[in-house]
Length: 137
Image (cartoon, rainbow, N blue to C red; front, side, top):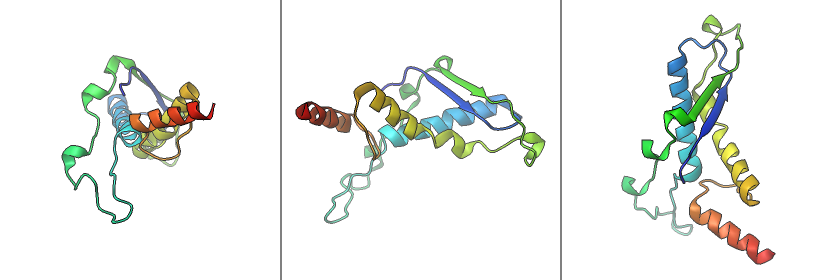
């Protein structure tokens, strides 16, 4: 799956370093995207053995080619102040990652009418869900 555009917002209080904060959003989104659609460690349910035999070459993560161009990755920040943070700032790390899986799952549901409750949501799982949906109709 190729992303064409991302719009991401964050409330991190006072933005001390906007470029660094945008980089955190880009990186967190990339990790969330990867976790949601790529990263899988299939295993044999009977033996518990990894089916990829632990080879990192079989563990897919996104590359820059999988992400939208920076011109198509819009980041905006809420204008807030956190009195307990340094200079009014808040943390940003996990906040950039956490909402990604739910947003992607909801987008797939809105587009195709199928829900997913387990990650990763791979192309094969989407195709199987669409076939199952079609068979029920």
